[in-house]
Image 1 (tube, rainbow, N blue to C red):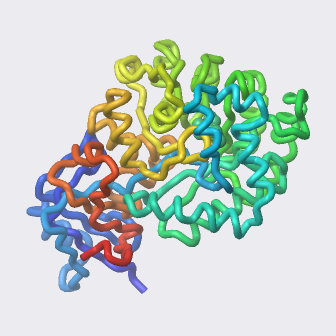
Image 2 (cartoon, rainbow, N blue to C red):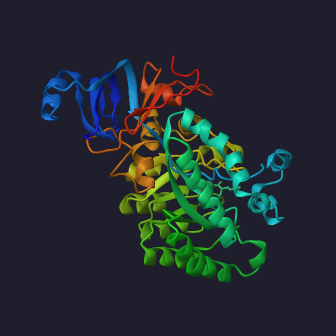
Image 3 (cartoon, rainbow, N blue to C red):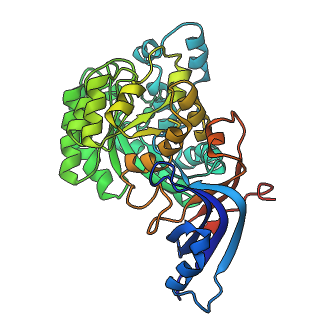
Length: 416
Ligand code: NIG
Ligand code: FE
C-alpha cells in the first residue's frame, strides 16, 4: 500500500532549520511518517504535483494560521524512578547541601534503594504520569537514563521500563546507560573496580540486549573522576556507542574537556565550566546541555558560562533533567522559561535548545529536531501569537495539537 500523503496548510512555521527558519504562510507535505516538503503555501500546488499527487486528493489539514514547531525533544532526563525525595528537599531548605546529603548516604543512593525494591510494573506505573505530563507539552522525543539500579539486574530493569514507556506512549524514547551515577554500597571504597565492572561486564551485556543508545557518566567530586570516565568511554567506543557527560555541576573536574576530546554528544550542567570548556565544546561539536531546573532547585549561585558558550559558537540545548533529587519537574516549557530568565538565553536559543540542538545532543540530528524534507513528521501546533510565548508562560501549556509521525494525537478534552 502506498504511504499516505498528507497536506498541512495555513501554518506559521518555525522550522528551526536555519536560525528560527520562519515561514509566515507555510505548508508541509508528509508522506507516511516523514516530511516530504516544507515551504511557502503559495508553492504548495507545484510541490504536490512534484510529489506525484496530481489527481489524488491527499488528506488536508488546515492549521488555521497557527504556529508550528518541530516536536519538542527533552534530551536529558532521569524520568524512570520510584518514590521521591521531598524529605531531602525539606532538608536542603533548612540549609543542608546536596553534596552533604549525598555523602551521608542519601541523595542518589536513597532513590537506588527505592528502585531496587520496586517491581518493573511499579516502576512503570510511577514513571508513566511524568511521561504523560511531558507528552502533553508537545514532547515527541525524550531521553531516559538508568543510574538508580546500580546492579546489572536493576539497571536492566530501568532500561526495560524506559523502552516499555516508549512503546506505551506516542513518543520516541532514547535510553542512556548511567551506571556511573554514584558508587553503589557493594563497591564502597572500590570505585575503580566498580567502573571496571560496568565497563567490561554490564555495558556489553545491556548493549547486546539492545537497551543502550548512549553511555553517560557523572564526573564530579561526589561521583567519578576524569580517569574513570575515560575508562568507561573506552569501553563505549569499543562497542560503537556514543557517549555523554554530566560535568561541572558542583565543581570543575575537567569532565567537559574530556567529553569534548572524545567527541561526546553532549556535556550537561556546566555551571562550573568556563571559556576553555566553551571553546572545546564548540570545536568538537559537543552540545552544551543546560539544566536550569536543577540549578533552580539546588539554589545554585553559579551559572553556566552562556556568554562564553555563545561567543565560541557552541550548540546550546535545554532539558528538564526530570529526577527526584535535583530537578523534580516534568515541564520542558518551564525549563525553557528558566533558561531564558535565569541563564539569559534568548527565546530563539531556548526553542532551538529543545529542537535542533536537543536532537544533536541525542545523535538524532539526521532524523529530527527541524522541519525539513526527510525528517520524521513530528511537530506541534501551538495556541500562541508568537513563538517567544513558548518560553514566556509559566505553568501554562499553550499546546494545541501534537502530530507524531504525521498522525494527530488526541487527548481527552484537549483538542476542541
Ligand atoms: O542531573 N547530577 C547527577 N544526576 C542528577 C541528579 C540525580 C539525583 O539527585 O537523583 C542531575 O542533577
Ligand atoms: Fe542528570
